[in-house]
Amino acid sequence: MPAEESTPAIVIRARDYSESDRIVTLLTHDFGKLSGIAKGAKASRRRFERKLEPFSQVILYFRRRPQGQLVFITRAERGENPPPEIEDDLAKIALGSYMLELADALTTEEGEAVEAYRVLANALDALGRGAATIALRQAYELRMLAAGGFGLEFASCRVCGTVAQAEDGVVYFVVSRGGIVCARCRANAPEGAVRLAAASAAALARLGSTSFGEATVLPHGGADGALAIARFLASIIDRKLRSVEFLDSLL
Image (cartoon, rainbow, N blue to C red):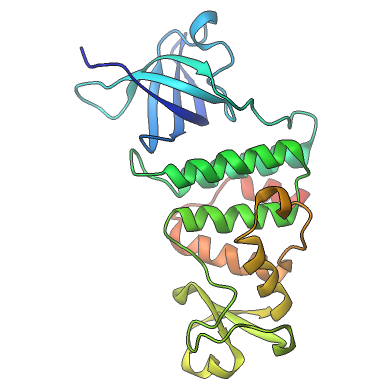
């Protein structure tokens, strides 16, 4: 029998399977994203009660199967951090659901995801402690993209390296370059671009490097900044995230 393994984990998806089982997808600290089956999860109070629901942060115990991608989840214990307190706030529910879905979309089964795990855990903690804001959403998007190897550049021009200044007026976010180009270099970067106010670019640059706790009270990157991030996400994710429309209707 395979040895039992364990890791801190955050539940990002769960669904019932048969009369008593659950299939659960988790972002783990040590093994990337894992999907597993929890036999008897709907009936076992001691091993699983309310520990395999989305947002739960747990210590996961599992055994690998000789064949197949699903692991056998043997038990789950509460982790150091409780789930974020979001039940009575519709905007928090919407943003939290989006955080889980984006983490799911930007990670792969058992691919290295230590930084993505940390980003998600810290973002959920900030969401539970503070408010659901556009700035927190944008900070999370930028940090999760960076954890996945897609660090976007909003501080300096991708062509000449000049730091963008507020007095520049506008810059241009070029999806294929993963960053901005200044007005002077726009002719040298003829690809399609999103026109950004320099102030929006500066706000996004700050949000991408600050703590989530601070991000909740910072200015956000505006509608033009949101469009730039959305365009980039659409270029690397092959499906529409179901939580986006609901979140956009609230924030």
